[in-house]
Image (cartoon, rainbow, N blue to C red):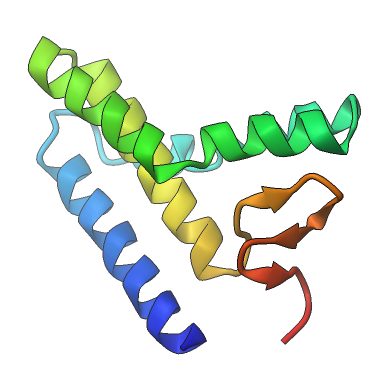
Amino acid sequence: MKSLIKIEELAMFLFAGFLFWKTEFAWWWFPALLLLPDVSMIGYAINNKTGAYLYNLVHHKGLALLVYVIGFFMGSAALELAGIILFAHSSVDRLFGYGLKHIDSFQNTHLGKIGES
C-alpha cells in the first residue's frame, strides 16, 4: 500500500509540475519556491500543538487547491503559483513519508512515524 501511495504522490507532484509549466514564470521559480512552505515549521518553536496546526494548515492539499482556484478565477498568476507550490510541496513531503502532523510530536504523522519502515 505504501508503494501505491508513493506512486500517487509522485503523480500529483508531476501534475503540479505540469500546471507550473503552463504558467509564464521562469522554470527556476519552481525549485526556488518548492521548500518555502516548510517555513510553517516555525510554529514548533512555540509548542507541538501550535506547530502541528500551522504545519497542517500550510501542508493541506485542499488549501493548495483553493488558493490555485481563487488565483485562476481572479486572474492572479501569483495566487496560481502559490497554489501550485503548496500542492507540489505537500506531494513531495508525502512521497518521502512526511505526512500531516499529530499534536504530540513532529515525528507522529498520518502516514506513521517518521523514520520507521
